[in-house]
Amino acid sequence: MNYALIIAFLLLSVSCSTDEKSASTANDTEDSASPVESNAIPVYNQAYQENFEADKISAILNSAKNGYVLLDPFQEEVTDHVAAIQANGNQVGAYISIGTGETYRDDYAQIKPYLVTTPWGEWPDEFFVKETSTGVLEVMKARIDKIAAWGFDWVEFDNMDWAFDNESRDAYKITASESEAIAYYQELSAYVHSKGMKCMAKNRVEDATDFDGVLYESYTDEKNWWDQSGAQSFLDAGKLVIINHYNEKSCGEVYAEYKGIYNDNLSFICEDATLKKYVHFNE
Image 1 (cartoon, one colour):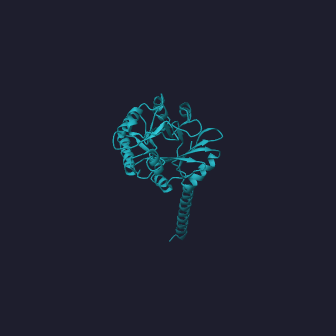
Image 2 (spheres, rainbow, N blue to C red):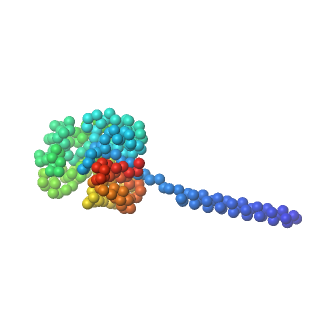
Image 3 (tube, rainbow, N blue to C red):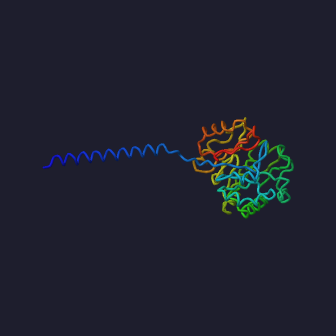
């Protein structure tokens, strides 16, 4: 028997096994060190602002890429740019207020019979929806029909929480019940989906599990005021969660604070009090 040959074979086997383990360990280390990609995306907002100027279409066309861009589709010539904004990889959302009627909208005459008679003190050109059981649904669906025809990806529902504050209900004589208000925005969400678009909730996700995302409005003296578990449930489901924060001198610090509460998948836009404009994170 050739013992020298056997010993050489055993030594070679041990060497190969050691090399394989080293390679495996190196791969494991490399995998664990790989950064986890965030689902957060940049957010642009042409539709509304709190203190300073909203994002302009020209800036959006130049800078917005692979993000969520919110437009007011009923402002003049805005819809002319939807396709160009989408060409940069963006999802384009259309703003509508489902809890109020605005005097400056073209369909104000159609929605006026379903509104309260006292203007909203904070926004004197707006009147709360009084009841949802008659024709207001048809007015909103007509808006959604136009938005779908213009090629939008999302519809964002502002003021969907209008009927849940008892003081406002009493002050403005809102007669829609909470259950009717929930049924109202659920039906509108289903209608958005039937048109092949996604639906963005605004400031609440209660009874809104079929919505595809949510945007919360945040303030320096009023942060994370909403139902945190609801926001987290949307993040856990892989849905788009956006915080639009207003009038802030330390936008980066606030963003870090929110990521500490939630996670890196949170999308964030901030109205910078020094620059006097929106700043866009996750670009």
